[in-house]
Amino acid sequence: MRPSWDDYFMEITQVVASRSTCLRRRVGAVIVKDKHILASGYNGAPSGLVHCSEIGCLREKLGIPSGERHELCRGLHAEQNAIIQSAVHGVSVAGGTLYSTTQPCVLCSKMLINAQIKRIVFQGPYPDELSLALLKEAGVELRPWSKE
Image 1 (cartoon, rainbow, N blue to C red):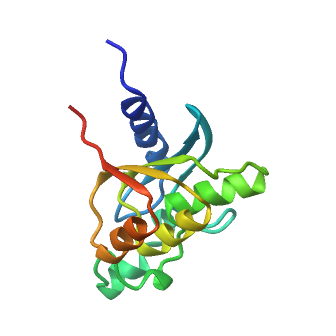
Image 2: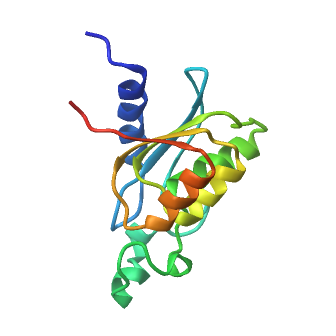
């Protein structure tokens, strides 16, 4: 049996997440429009910089809980990397769908709103109620996904 489009793209996000270099959470994101992948991203340090998988996690060392003090992380989130990749390659994601292995945080949510993402399909929760409130206010469709 063929997977639905949401199932298909969510499976791809899991492969993308396997490239993550984050020690706490491996996240993958794919931006899709008209059933075509426009960009993908995973969480990790900026290009050319040493990854947390090599030098350790500052947030872990400081005991910072998930969802707090994002500025103390050397990595970018998967959603941020997907948006950046689309910008680097001159691809508009306006009107697209973001597929992610995790609910976006508030920082990513604000970026996704301004990138004009219209729909977000995500697998796992993230401890950030403000992100959900902003996405709802912006009229972004949210769809929690679970593998059946």
